[in-house]
Image (cartoon, rainbow, N blue to C red; front, side, top):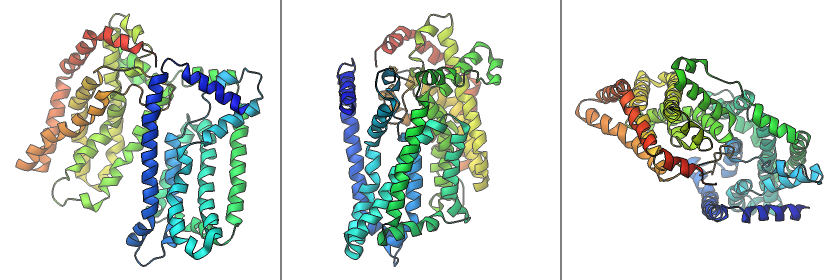
Length: 495
């Protein structure tokens, strides 16, 4: 049955109208994956040297064992955003005369065949060969690398269960945030050192097989937990009901004050929270609000007088991240129902105005959420305020203008990671206005007068953009209306 299902999957792929496009995409992605794995192997070969330079005079193995838990915390995060759920074909298989347990086993085992599951092996095996093999022999090496690989694989099954159980709930998001803060923040704040707590487990694995045996038991238990949950919840009526009912009545009352444009903004909000790809963009926007911690806590970027130049980019990124990420696929989000708006009087214009309203509203929320950065200095708050005004007054129009250059269709139910549907040349060029426009205004005033004069110039440009918002937005509306039939035709192309 395993090979029969593989054959059916193969026939489904080669008979698809987009087979050639999928092959080219997979070849490109395969090349990228091989390149990344090559970098992982290179990092593994240099890991011993890096640790010796960073922790001079200390045993590299002892240092690595005390920090391994942070690797697994990072793995938890990237698995959460990248790892795919193996439920794509459930609806096409459950009605067939095949045992449901066989289908579940096949889908789960197929999900295990992933480059993510060999990252830990490729990264730490070279280090083990260099450091552990000469001292403890092959048994010690197998015990140590086995404990690491098994921990990584346990995370694989746990994440499949976790995402299916909590992906669309506030509890799931709170758990991810708690893992991030308690894992990395505990050591930074001096509460407790999580690495030292877990260090004895990896130290013991080099000398005795007990940790490997325990982890192997946990590996089997985590697989069984995942299997039982999928088996007990895989029913056609549950899959369809989950897709059709979830978040049906979620609206933002504030938008109702803006007439039809507000209704369109509410419709766009429902689109975001109902579909997997758009929901991922929203979650990433919240996650990237922490981006400033990389720069504002780094003494390299500290400045006794004025503002560090890099902070302008950080401010633009933090206060406009949703607008930048979601806005780059401006009309592609509506590729499945664009004809509906096209056939309504004023439908396209109100759709665009509703998107503007949504972008600005979320940017306001991002700015308010970034206010606590004032802890690092009042100049940080000034940077965020100036870049926020610039984002909603100027940058939003530039992003939408580029996004309207030959928009492409996409499937909203697919994940966001390694999914390039809707992405064209315009999306790659989007970084130019984000990087260049703020500095074209800020740098001349910063060099000739002062850094704060540059911030005032950014704020003034943003305020002028807000004052003349209607004529600037009208330019993008007219651009859509002039090319509406071409856009509609491109959206009818089969993915």
